[in-house]
Amino acid sequence: MAVQQAPSHLGRLVCLFAFLLLLHSGYSTFEHLSYLKAIDGHESGLPQDIVIELMASVAIFGLGIVMVADDFKEILMETEMAKQTIESLDARPSFYGFSHRGRAVFRNVSFKK
Image (cartoon, rainbow, N blue to C red):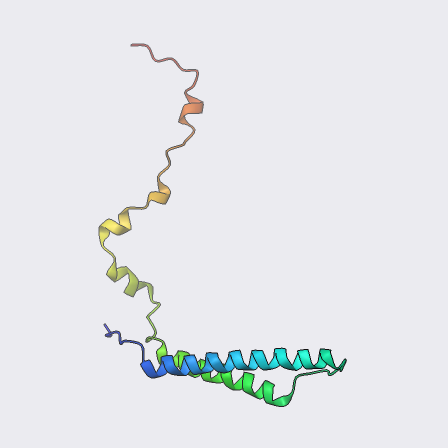
């Protein structure tokens, strides 16, 4: 079984930097659209520097997530079943049925002693 490592502090810093870069590109977009509205300008897209900043922030954020993430876990059922005890496998409260048709079937039957 693999030993889990603590998340990388460098990865967290990279994620923080990417998030701040993403916020800056959003603010720049807002400012650009406000400027266009103020001068009644009609432009079909954003300036290239804002688009490049946005793409760079997404790429850097992806790199930071890869640095922070743990190792992959196995998805084999045998691995998960080996961790379970027989008591946990036998107890399935979702299959317990306490409201069954017995009351409706035996409603008119009288039991004599």
